[in-house]
Image 1 (cartoon, rainbow over the protein chains, first blue to last red):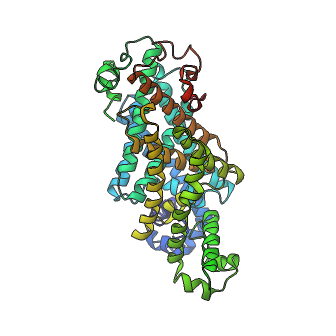
Image 2 (image 1 turned 180 degrees about the vertical axis):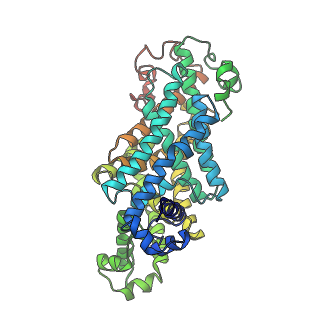
Image 3 (image 1 turned 120 degrees about the vertical axis):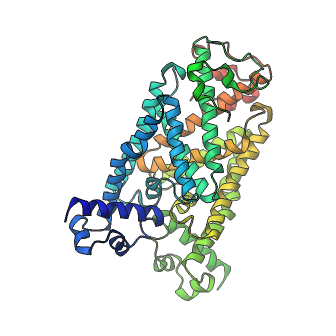
Length: 230
Length: 230
């Protein structure tokens, strides 16, 4: 019984938990999908809860290479990395007709408080996710206000993703997800505008914000990519 | 078999689904908790999925009297109503040691895409929630920028709640919930500041936002309640 067998079991269990939920997925279904017998499964996982722990560890191991890394590689602009990350979840919703979003979010609400080990793995996933976004916000430096609570904003970004995914699944439409992300984008724009004022750089004259058209016309060239219509 | 029996079954089923999840709750457990026999249950609900539909209809019926109404009655300030609503979820987290948040959010991720009836009830709940927040944002009138996407901001508020609840449950702490809400508060402050500039009212001088202390010292008296430190 090789590590390959263990990986295959975890891969199929992850896929089935994501599709149907933890409780709704029978061990027999996992065995069939992975093409292994129950002896192999119980060799690696003494019970279904051990399988849940294995699935969560797998998600944690994949967080950097499969989720955060690609967003980081997609652009050098630290603020845009946030929106690249959110775009990846949007794609996942889109290709599944808005039926599947974040697999860890599902498990968090279904079985997240069942044992302290499960809870701590899920918390580790969310904390790792938010910590990386916090790092990107730090990399944005003086583009954002000095007094901004950057770890707090990273938590908001995660809320936007998880809450947007949940609403999109219920609506069967990307609209609530897109609306939440567009509002986050607008918040980031207002923060960048505030930071420009802090630095004493030219900003929109008072009373002219609305009439003067898109704010991105005021953005320095190097920041332009972060400014889109909302 | 009275309506009282039906209500008692739904009340216990709601409570058990909220505590343990839909799949993890056996029908026998619901019968025991409600003190009814299986004949009574099947008289009202031919199967467990009918029970799920009944529970979701109950949540929808309670949305106004138990969730939105109290926030609306707590204050006449339309922007503050949003934060009163979020405070109610914070209290629910607090009294359950961060183990229970939004019962409909749980069902949305566990079984939300199982049938179109279930999905449509959950979407109806979220839409009703966001529609009321949208109404409050409309009531805020010129306190918010004219071009603001108010239905979109209402969806963000719901994302903040659901995403904040999820993270708080994983962390076993209110901190990620509070951080998300504080960021929403700050976004609202920046929106009100933008609206003041649109109206040509005095705002903080360029470059002095950070040094000049809390922005609420600049807020007109009537709006002061909406301005808190973040």
